[in-house]
Length: 380
Image (cartoon, rainbow, N blue to C red):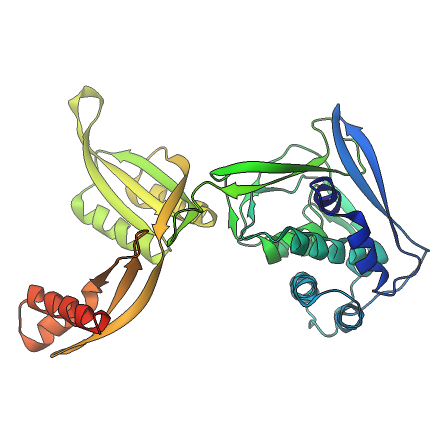
């Protein structure tokens, strides 16, 4: 489906075919057709090849890629995807990446799929790939190892740490091959970013689903904030709950637990609730994949009955870690570059506090000394 979406978005099929021909696969031909799924037009790519029963190891596929005419960047993408697959297969089968057998993903069509995707992504010259949460579907699927629940074991392993989307479709919507591409290539998960759409590709799957069109949509464009230098964006989850019967000590402990579990920030705002009750709005900012764990802490430590979720996008200055030397010792800090090229520095509070206590000097003096040291270093 991704192969077809790439072609539909403008990647020349002849270039994909030429690269796949150089792999030495037996009579492997990409066949492009136009189909309709639930009334929507889409491209469909089928991989036609002679029957085979080979179960390849990673080193077989690595050698195949290395001796091909793929470019260095295309080889790098293909190797990265297959490496993800090998690590997942090895883990679920209790083997090593050198010894694990590729079954379905070692077949001709899967090799052609992955190498074709590597060619397509390289041809598009994408700077960043953003993906929505992944729907796996539900039910059962038959694989080389027997009947398995969806997602299949290798697929589930590959999607560890990646946000999933609930789906009532009783079918396998995400295969190990697709999951490996996502694992290896996606930079960020979440809603559609701020962008100017330039091309759209639709790739069709083979199955006809009752609930929805079996399509994968690829949107290509320019990020609307790319013109602003020295900034980057990401997606976070904001969790909020109102609490009116929790002591300051309990809230403080809850803060510690949330930060230890990976929250990016935790803060409280005084509010007034119904019946004029004084309360606190407790907010947690976190990476989307940590949502469930942090919600569990909120329920357990605050006794709240409900938590609101919001997926939000952030714009951040690009930061680097630097260290400066003061008369009392070294202080770490963050240096950020503003869009206009100017820079600023914030010393690490914990370092400044440690030196202030160690040398019995005012904290503000240590912080100012770190700032002065950074300014002296950057003015040289």
